[in-house]
Amino acid sequence: MSIRIVLALNAAPVYGWTTPRGWATVAALVALAGAVYGGLALFRFVRRRAVIALTAGAAGLAGGGWVVAVAEGGPGSGSGIVGGLAALVFGLVALALGGMALKRS
Image (cartoon, rainbow, N blue to C red; front, side, top):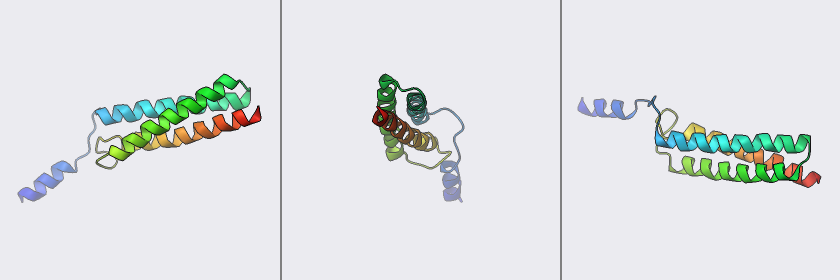
């Protein structure tokens, strides 16, 4: 019976703010900003916006990849896996938009 209680306590979701969730959120926000700058660079070409999109996308991709690589649990465990995956997706979008904007020039 004590084994079941210990397993149940380890599987309980974490609802509070944790450090890995903070890192994942920062990485996702940086990558999202890169995606926004990439969209703006495609809409009205400014080389600086495209470079910012590429830089922010790469930083968000690296941060999200790090969070996903060191995560010890799934969603709800407090390890930031959902934010890390969001950062990976936003980072890839930012890199694609920034690259397309640079290619247009």
